[in-house]
Length: 248
Ligand SMILES: [Zn+2]
Image 1: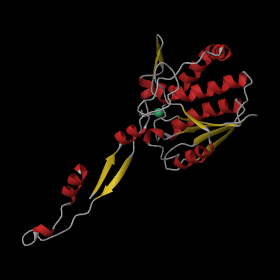
Image 2 (image 1 turned 90 degrees about the vertical axis):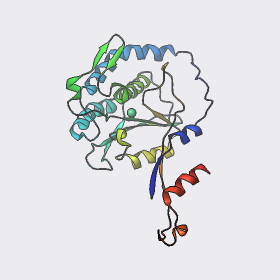
Image 3 (image 1 turned 180 degrees about the vertical axis):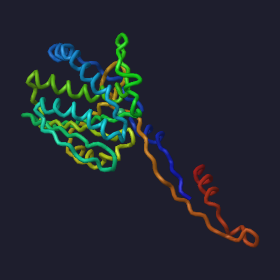
Image 4 (image 1 turned 60 degrees about the vertical axis):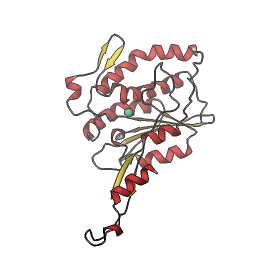
């Protein structure tokens, strides 16, 4: 008998139980001003990518979003490579690389796939109501993709090059567990000094430095067959064994 066990609780327990509230650092006025100035352009790009459906497995949609993003990465001075997905029916992943003049290898990972079906963007497109944006994937994670691009744009505009390398990996199958990107993610992760995941963070808009995780594993339990009529005492029931050993 084979049992699939989800282990969210286990990995939650391994995360720091007493993570302190993050400290707010003083605003860098130059960065802050540049970010405020960039906001209208940033929202325009966000609107464009949100209004293209790119649910996981929507190859055409994913490529259309990529066609908007790749020139933006190139304009940042990045060398950009598209990498075939490691599973069928997925659009290519995008890897942008930028060399600096300092130390520190930074990896940024985001995904352009969403959980929404084709036609969703037409039904409920990008919309701003007061200070709230809605639309398929606007937070998870097209907002993160665009945020990453504009963070790099601001660094470029401010002439900040104090890093050895920035790698920006935009993958296309995260919402289904990244079957198209596993190996591609592994390589830069091993050499990165820090990895920034561009998923939405926690309020009040700070870097999230720990989260719960989840995992799954299989447990094989073997029983022992025996004749039910003449020697039932020699048999062992796999389900019973699993339940009772779980309690031990
Ligand atoms: Zn996400």
